[in-house]
Amino acid sequence: MPPRDQSMETIQRELTAFARRARATAARMHPELSLVSFTVLSHVEDRPGCRATDLAAHYMLDKSTVSRQIATLERLDLVERRVDPDDQRVQVLHLTEAGTATLAQVAASRLAAFQERLGDWDEADLARFAGYLLRYNAAYEADGRP
Image (cartoon, rainbow, N blue to C red; front, top):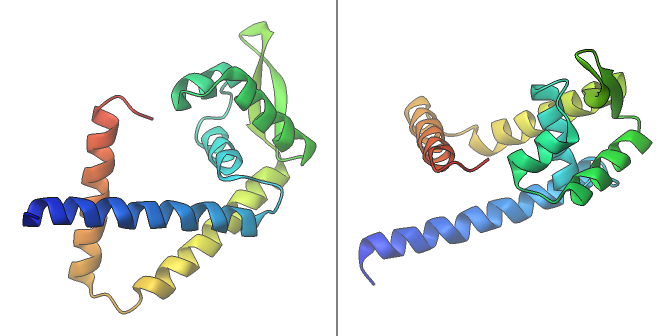
């Protein structure tokens, strides 16, 4: 197998392992929340006042899937619906205090895990890794993907 193909295969395998660990970590952080729920919660944090239809379009998910995720987040008091001040017929999503606190806790836990795993990497390796991740995600977004 050519070296480039070998590298591509390794990247695919390692990113798949990373995604599996991310799903497992999400379940440990809050047993009632899936990785999709955490993603929705993070999106609402980044874009307060977004609508469920915005989420469905952004993540290319069925509206019923997003609706179930939002219902779970509401039941757990992490997200609340409010009337859109610009259009009284529309409901927009905002984090509750509990939602903000949950995301802060998750972010702190993730940062601690990364610091532990990458603690022995030198500055140059960290900078290269960060740059590669930025480049990969930028290419992904340039393809019009969420």
